[in-house]
Image (cartoon, rainbow, N blue to C red; front, side):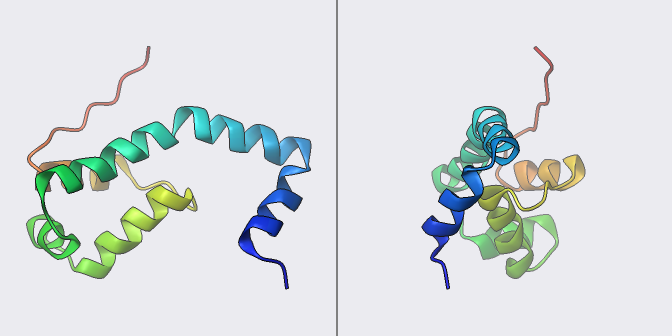
Length: 95
């Protein structure tokens, strides 16, 4: 069985995968880092964010895991709820 790092290295050998990974890393990862940093700065636990969002802590854990791994992209509505729970406002801009 391959480790995570071995599997990642194997997949990144493929040009199409490498290109998509670079695109995500360049465009999406900084945004995801900001979102996760906002909760840390707010001093809130996942459970506290969940309560403010009207959901359960495991849902917030799944959301944050999705942001970290890039396995799926949460909806704008979900990100707006998350931002509001942190006392923030989500802005999406084209530049």
